[in-house]
Length: 370
Image (tube, rainbow, N blue to C red; front, top):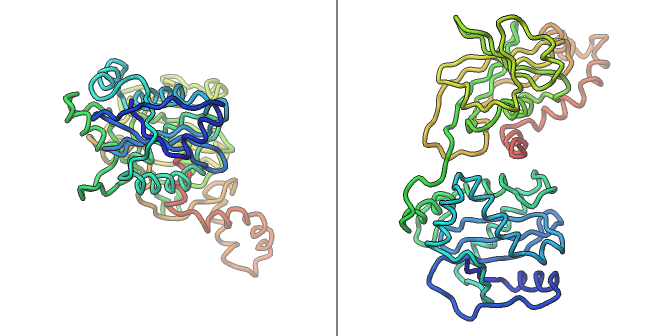
């Protein structure tokens, strides 16, 4: 693996190691990368960019002892990200044998053609990293985000680094469709309000997500606070009901002719088919019923992170007392002269503040954490 190094990279790594980095004396004509050390959200990160495809690997946050073992960090991140993309170990070794050495060789020079792309990538990472967990150096979702953004390449073409990487592997004789991209399900989710128009969210979600992850996404999309129990229910004609839950207590309420499973153990791809309709029930006191319709299964998709793509209607307040309580809440809040107005206004202050920023962009930034 041939790596061009920036001056910043050399300075930081040699400081951590307490010794000079052994440098290669010549550059091969094969695949190469450029390495840089930057500060992301006040923590050090190693950014590795492929010279041809601009595929980017990120290790963040890094401590001094991790910087001193940068070769191991690079190997760790590379192999785990390739695993995440669906490349098995055998295929990874073929790639390394065909296009680059498994050994890491540093070259003390920058690649001038990559400087602007590297700067743009660092700027992107500085903005994106704020919503990611800083407890692990393996930032799979962050790498997914940076490698699925659209770029204009030196030859004028527009593509994503991930697509470019797959084409690069194919052009080097390693076969086509090497990277597994899961199908994406389109879900129309309707919060049933009886006397009011439904609150609707349309979602695109990779089908490798679990139902527990879908629960997290629905909490963000409908501005719930995840204070209460929930369940997914599948009632199919001439078949047993299936209930997906996330806690041991729920198993005590299992009904006859009902299959009950943990939602964290079931992926969407195992249960969902085009045209299916099922329910998501949240807060068994207020009893919020969300009807979920599978409107489309999108094959050969490129999406790996869930997205809200359409929104209709405002969320309702947590603990408002169900649909009847929501009707009363709206009635009082529409009449400042009502004797309960001040009480309801104070009670709902947090809800109204959150509602003012509850946009599709805000939801999708929150979803990036999952």
